[in-house]
Length: 246
Image 1 (spheres, rainbow, N blue to C red):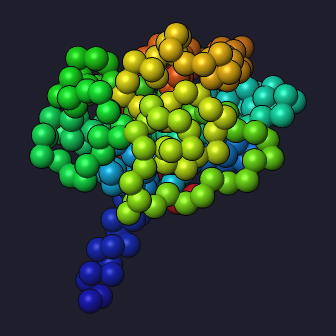
Image 2: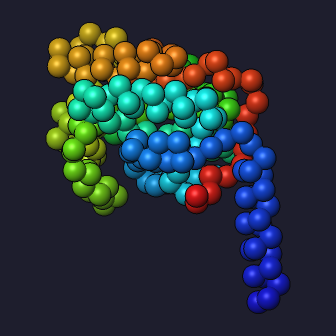
């Protein structure tokens, strides 16, 4: 028993040391007002389970990225909104797990609500899944906009059958975001930022996010309204340290 306890302590210390050696900071240490809904630390995501390396639901980023995000938050709060992050730094082991899931036709649970019109084997070719990610370099963030005083969304229920990510917001998994036309991580053309099939109100909501982020140096990925990168902080170095409790 004593050896097992010592081994667990040493493993935790090793992980903490590895994380400390990266240039990543906790977003809540930079701006605690930004909401966090870290989807890959739980089950409400396209693989249906927590991803490797997500040992805590915390947003980590390179410091210049976190500071720029805080400036965008300041702008949005003046207009009555707040940012909410879904994903920030992503360990390379999590990226590998996503790729393995995409290649496995027998993967469970059934998460087709995230790709209702596609065979998931096409997700690589269509640019939704990749073997590399700016998230692993701490310079990319997935996020949305929430009304400033909105109550938290109801808890996700893994036993409930939610509508697909392209159905009306009331039918999808719970989220407190303003209506962007699709849910987060929706692998569908309707998620393309400039997609013309969303309503005028949904398109206007996307512009609120895109314009706020653009003003502070972020670039949107055209296939995903939620994905932004801060390329000025990118030195090409990716990390695999786990995400630990703050």
